[in-house]
Image 1: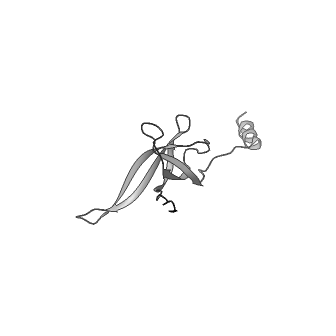
Image 2: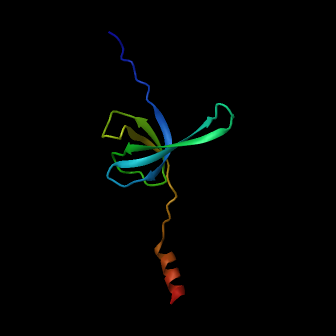
Image 3: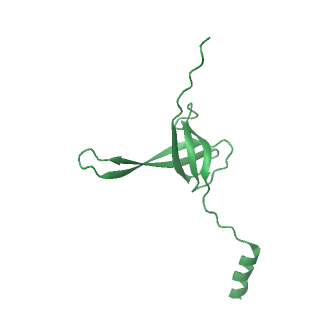
Length: 104
């Protein structure tokens, strides 16, 4: 019996730049590449449409995406894991009371 060959999964790391529709994210992936003639390092950016099954990602999160079967016309990637969370400002009730108290 032959053992099944595992496919190499293509993964990329990027930042969530938009979350407009249900279960779909736009993730921007940056990579550095050298110019063939001038040897200058150039930053290249590409935006991928990514499937987020559990809808846990927010704009600004750092995520790892993995290539998958076609999910829709443009979605070929899904979220593998959330690496870093975006800084979210959380206001407490005491802070809002202080701000309101100073204005009146």
